Length: 162
Image (tube, rainbow, N blue to C red; front, side, top):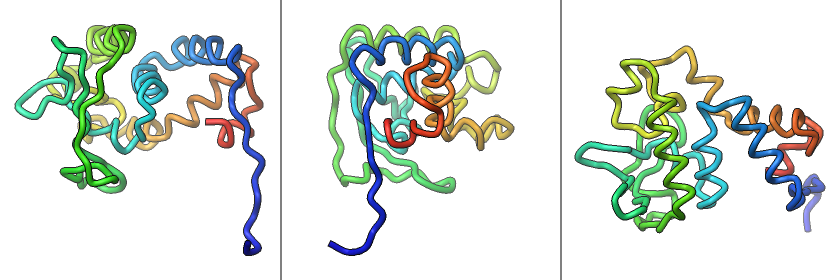
């Protein structure tokens, strides 16, 4: 099997998930909805970043509690018109996930640029606010700090746990 490096990986214990998620929301409310939606759906950050909350290409079907997954954004400015798996599909979201998305839109889109954007996660993706772009792309670094603050994992170990 080759001479590659073997890393030990671990996961959050079930009893650690609640404190971790609560601490993350306390520390980084502007990034909470993306983390939550990722945890609930298992979608990659590259699929979450280009989601649109409104407009002609809206991906959140608010009335039906559905998420349309049809784009991907990995590096640079290009948004692919399909996912990395080359598929488009819909996900039925639980009421709690829809509530988190509604909370995010109502409370976390604070600047005129964010409010004008069709993107769901403007602070993570929009070139209109470049001072936050480099830091906000790495939600895992925020998750590491939240996990450390919640006492659920050592900061240096989170990369193996999320």
